[in-house]
Length: 175
Image 1 (cartoon, rainbow, N blue to C red):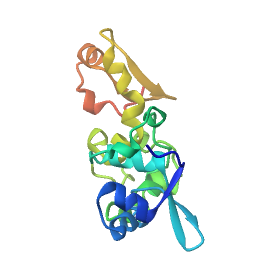
Image 2 (image 1 turned 45 degrees about the vertical axis):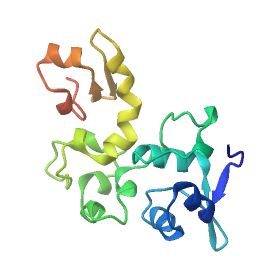
Image 3 (image 1 turned 180 degrees about the vertical axis):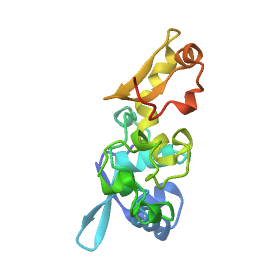
């Protein structure tokens, strides 16, 4: 078991069974969050754990601990999440980025939205929001999660009542 709160890039690479360059790529492409210490990076153990879990990679025995129960990834706006990726190239001029909207899927019906991916299929939505709302699927009675005037998601009972597929709810306005 690892007791440190952070590990070096070489240690992270060793734990994951990959080259240091792979871990550096994860960090530089903002897939894995790390802290810079001079010329080197240190990777928070929790971030490494969450990254491996979210990418469906094998969790090394050394990282398995009751202290690392996944709760939620830290919130980041979509344009920051996608920065440096091919998808992020479309953020310039997007209504969400230009207006600094906190929750991107609230603009899903806007003509100024540059994202063509359905919210429920979007990696950003699944990575940042879905984990926050999946608990509602435990309920047999209708349940929904909303913020302001927009749904984040609903369970199957709610979907049946409204006769709208669950995947269409993120960003649907409450009227």
